[in-house]
Length: 591
Image (cartoon, rainbow, N blue to C red):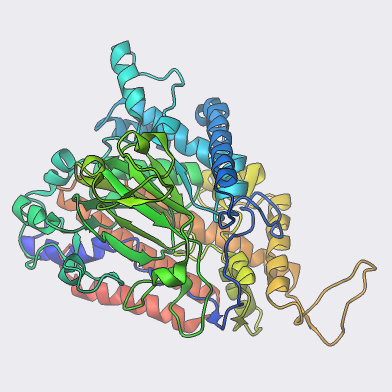
């Protein structure tokens, strides 16, 4: 059934927030006064022991040369891992080759087979890299420059060799989304993103993120003039862009398959000369930033100490909360990100951007464009050289916190199901961040985890998890729970006897196993299926794309509703049910 324009408009707000209905997330802890020392580093990623503390992000010491050397070593190791994994990217039996073939074909319809293949090779290789998993993931930010992302692996589309060489020299990220070709395409559609508020653009209030819709009247189609006007003097952005542009939908599909996690992409566009593109803030997502055009200065910081009365650490700098530079200290990364570059920012790491000032970050690419003598010296005189065109970057969010795929949420669900108290004040920063790590699913599950996932997928969401994989997850969750409440749980000592009979027994292994089975098989699997449906066959001029995205939104609400019921949390179940039913009521008779 075709929709009338006004009815189509009613669906758009649901589409534009389709992957962010759970944006605030389930906060499984109560904030308490944090420890006195700030969190400057997190433990190792999912591929190592939960107790491991990596020195990889020791970025706050005074030895800049050691930091630079360490970072370059990590990047080189990751690139080596990507090259080594290249054959496996096409032959890995755990990969859904039907999906990747479709996604690469859709991707290549906009760019080329060379860039399409390189995109998959990069994403698969990054997710397969032991260095990325163990030393970078949810531990430290990392910048990979364009010349480091160029994968000269003998790819090509069988055409002009010179053209292939030029495309590889250009890098696969460069030009994925441009103002002239992609942003202009929304002229005459109902797509409407957001723009930063005038108080931010005019410098009246630059310490918290405020925004409004690009156009005031959502019942009519968007014009190019409205988009240009919104872009004059500030940032515009589009959430859930994978359901709006086919190339970005294909990129989402490749990312989901490579990492085995829910993913979602946003587009941010900023003209030159913007003092504050976005103020300091944190996000729930681990993000991969792809700079597709222009340049932008990024400053990324370690999470500041949590403090009583402050906002959720994953949602700082928003909704009136202020995250000041004094609170942040020195940045871990302060660099101008240029076309073709890739930046990884862990969830909860504050960051801010602009297209106005440049720094000497000791990077050859930037040094070619600026002439300053001191490390991290700001200069505006060279800004017109670096920021000579509109900046476009894609933010690919890997949504473990949004969809409750953390140890904290496993604990939250397990204790409620077992009839035990789940409320907790955490005073130690390290314990908080350990618990908020992503569970060992997707690329974090190792070989056994990937093969278990393949079996579940091949069986339509049914089947048993690999025993060794499941036992590993049980032990990891137990470790987190004991770290969070060492005086609560009765744990066997080396002699096989209980430490303290007065302490509480942990839930049974059977209860642990039931929760892990549910999270992997009954929660993650349908979420991935919904996203694969959402990001396929995207056409911004076709009403069916909007209708499909809306229906997928409703399915996501239903998944979270079911999660609340499984966890025996009636308040959560009812909240998502009411949201879903309210939307059904608003759109009754439209489809």
